[in-house]
Length: 512
Image (cartoon, rainbow, N blue to C red; front, side):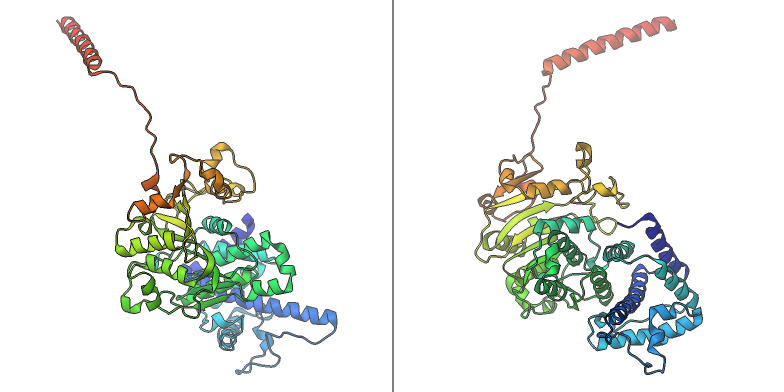
């Protein structure tokens, strides 16, 4: 967790960009990504140099070559530890004319460090701003992986221009809930086909470090973790860079974060490849049939992106693979043939396990759309017996545009560090969701009037539309209210009328 001092330092860096004329939040985070990447490259080479010196052998891994670049600038001057001490105009010259071309060259070579930097450009020309930001970043304490990751997450939280083209950040505590519901394992191949800033992949990695620490001590599993486990796709180059940096700063060395329009490109090479999908895809409305991958149209003939993404998840998952995905409420009860066909496929051809209804303000201030989390497993032969429904009413934050925390930080999220009182539990349903999900046998006995309950597949099929809306199956408990008979009410009214008449007569006498 970030201290107040570090948050203040990050806020100061952010304000420096704004006062220096860089006001677009995405541009700010992109430029910070570039600069943090340059600093990381220098840190990595410093570690390698220290290792070589301690062992008394030549440098095994050199990022900055010896000699000079094509413009005759010594590569040594391109290192953060060197140019941070330059005068502002000299620093601007070196960074703009030499460091960024060096980053782009790394990307062209296919380096794991540089492939997302092939279009890197310094997005401002204010030398004093560059010098100020370099100094402030250098003073920011980011020695540990946890602190680096938290700093970057805090920066990402400042992106307020989301919501365009259906994109918005998923709150971190909702991501944590979905990861804990699916319990990633060291053998998983994890994918987010609409990765954005890679929040789901990052949180899955953090969960694995916490739940399976022995994994990183096994050479084979460690290699799998760093090079083969995580796969994220997006068609926004800026978000790809941000996502790649997010994974690097959270300690995943070579995640596959790649450019791909997931709904437009055929998935032949990736079909059946992944064992776990975690996603909150953008729901931008409708696409043209011509621009949609034909293999998805075979699964569900529609132009609706929310349906196409669920079909995509089924396409990408291997048999036995599981998914946790956020979908708009329309997926649960939409009346079109495509909606019904998709729900029928999830319930009768695969194994739909849970529908968790989210409160409508959970994605504010970006969007007020009502959504739900679907948990399902790809089987191809059915397997749905009962579907678990949960009505989340509170996530620990206010449901208005401010999204202010309702509890102390240690009491937020699905796994709070301190126990919650009865009153506090009413403000944060996430721990209760995890607890009930872990004991579904007990859920079968809950009445339909409870916060959560089970619904048999036969009842869902009997609706004729495979309706998955929670309110379709919830029972409202009506409390019996005793009312007086009409005769008694009329008698009471006559008494009141007589009292009013008597009072008026007395008033008239007093006025005489």
